[in-house]
Amino acid sequence: MSQIPSYKNIHNRFKLDGNSFKFNDLFEVAYSFIKEGKPHERIIGDFLMDWINPKEIIAVKTSGSTGAPKFITYSKQAMVNSALATGDHFGVTIGSSALHCLSAEFIAGKMMLVRAMILGLELDLVPPNGNVLEGNNKKYDFVAMVPIQVDHALNQINQVKTLLVGGTAPSSTLINALESKTTNSFITFGMTETLTHIASRSINLKEEAFSILPGVNISRDKRGCLNINVSYLTQELIVTNDLVTLESDTSFRLLGRIDNVINSGGVKLIPEEIEQMISTLISAPFFIGSIGDEKLGQKVILVIEGKKYPTDILSKIEKENALNEYQMPKGLAFIESFEYTDNGKLKRKATLSKLEVHPY
Image 1: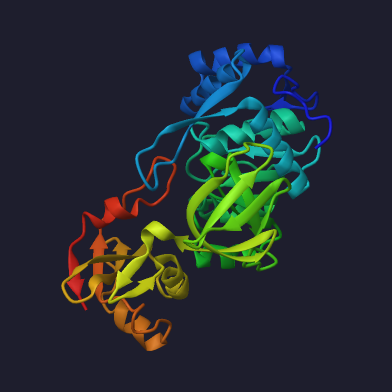
Image 2: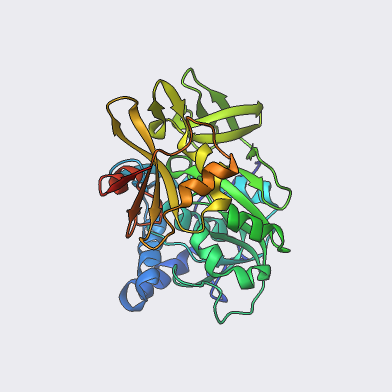
């Protein structure tokens, strides 16, 4: 990435809702959003105010999916570098049309704004809820959504040339639906600490391994978890709790999170792997969890959102022979609504604390 621009170098092709703006124009835009804008625009206004102030750093809020949300700081230059890496990886070109449909309260929404300003994108703003393409027939070159947004917009998703799906893992049903679309869809991997994605895998090509972005180096520690070094962000090693297998120096398969691992009768089980194996058999939102058991230590259970799902689902799973005896849930639980973070990630532990389990 030669001749790297600074955060003040707003691209001359950058447009926001059809209007061109330079760096010195952003104060007026931000002020207008904060004073007169809709809720999602006020958050964007706050971010733009942060972007144009003389401080070299910005505080970003973590999702809170594995603990209490917290703020971490990154330099604006690191965010510029991340935007350039995304442009290289996905072939985003100057003047590309893009849709901003993620809350700018979190890093994914902030980074879409940075990409637009630095890469010279023509960015349209919409509220980050419901069907974000509803009433809009425009075609977009580049869009990032969370899975629930993709699901709501599925009938119009062919309006999008390149789609990034992130925030949380999409269901097998959604992945299968996207495979039949003309949209080039990618599942992304990243976190607030890496300023969104550092790797992706193609849905259309049915890739199972994530390929890393330029400037990223990966390794696997003694726990089997992914360690990341992103040279354009920080010199510090980013240690994750994500269990992986390394396919090569530039690709990996994601297995699940080490803090979700269930030890049942001395056998360590990865819930995310089990969920993948049975994802086509359950139409409602669900996850694999565990409860304490005197004999096994931890007993595997299937947790389903809603209370109207057929209670014979465990029998159906068993008949499919999709799971071995250790993976097979020993209990079934229903919860009217799961606990989620503000940006839609499942809070497993908080949800499990609400359970009433029906033994199988």
